[in-house]
Image (tube, rainbow, N blue to C red; front, side, top):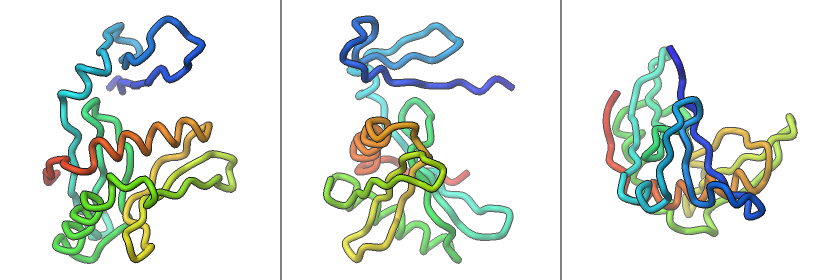
Length: 146
C-alpha cells in the first residue's frame, strides 16, 4: 500500500509553492486557505499492550503528535481534553534536540506534565511548523475511536 507523504513549503526563498501543501507522488496541491477549512482530529485507540493512547492528526491525515500510554480510556480522554485546553498556548510547548540530532517538541499541561509529543524533525523550523499545526488542530479537533 502506498503511503502518501505531505510536505509544507515553508521556504521563503522558493517562489514555487508558498503556502501550498503538496501530496507527494500524487501531483495534487491544496492552498493553505483550503487546508484551513478542514479540521484535524484526535484518534483514541488501545495499543497491543492494552494501554489507551491518542494521536492528533492534521486535516491532511499526517500525525502531528501522540500521547503516552494511559491505563484507561477515561484517562486518555482527559489527556485529549488537556491538549485541547493547552494547545493554543505557545508557552506550553518546549522544543528539544534528541540524542539522534533530530528536533522535537512536547506540549505540556499547566502542571508541566507532557501531554503530547511530536515526531523527530530534521530542523527546528520543522518542529515550529508542527507546533503551529497542533495549535490549529488541537484546540477543537474532533475525537474518534479507532
